[in-house]
Length: 360
Image (cartoon, rainbow, N blue to C red):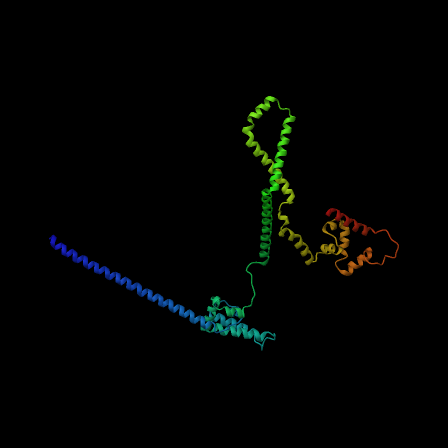
């Protein structure tokens, strides 16, 4: 029984091996066929894209305009929606019905757009051009409008730019100041000043101890512990001297950087003044016409300000009449006897003098 089992098992094993080889060969063949089909499909797709690209490049379509935008439809709109939009626009802008001088030109543009989108093949070419603009650089260079439509509010973008520049100003000035301090501390002059200051502080400390009249026993005790405290005392003395020198260096460098010295803070009063002039704010226009600063204008009492505002001095004729009334400018009064300055002239001179003192 054992001898019979041996040849039978060997035959079964041989058959199984042959079967597995057949399966492997079949799998390889299937994979090869699938790869060939995929390559063929990919080749067909590439050839179709190449054909579509070549066809799309032949036409100018709506030139600098977008055919869909001209008819007021979307790229996903169906044919009947495009036809309905064209009929509505054609009826409105037909040159025989619309007296507008631009009617004929617009009507031709609408007709051209409809001819592009009504033809299935032409529309497919146009859609390909819109979806692959990088493949048609010459078309968009030739018919591009060159207009930029920002997606962000320009005012927001401008504000962010101003804040960014202001932050860069502050960081740059702060870093420059830190670099100057570090460079000064590495110089020979600084080291010499530091040693001199440490000697002066040590001498002052020694004189202070002598004035207190330290006893001999205390001096002996102090002398015995001097070596143990020498390192710590020297470090404290150096730290105190460095702190004093840093204060001196800070004062020599001037005021530290501040946000008030950046672009954003300098633009605020300018923008306020500009807005007041643009909106023709009477108070600002009157103050500027008189050559007064905001401080000088604030010194005038409310009643006189109201009187000046009523004169509308920002108008050149009114200002000239006001100057003649006040005796400001001109040579008309040169030959006359000098008169006591009027109250208005005294007030104006006092205002200008007060502003000069405030600036000093």
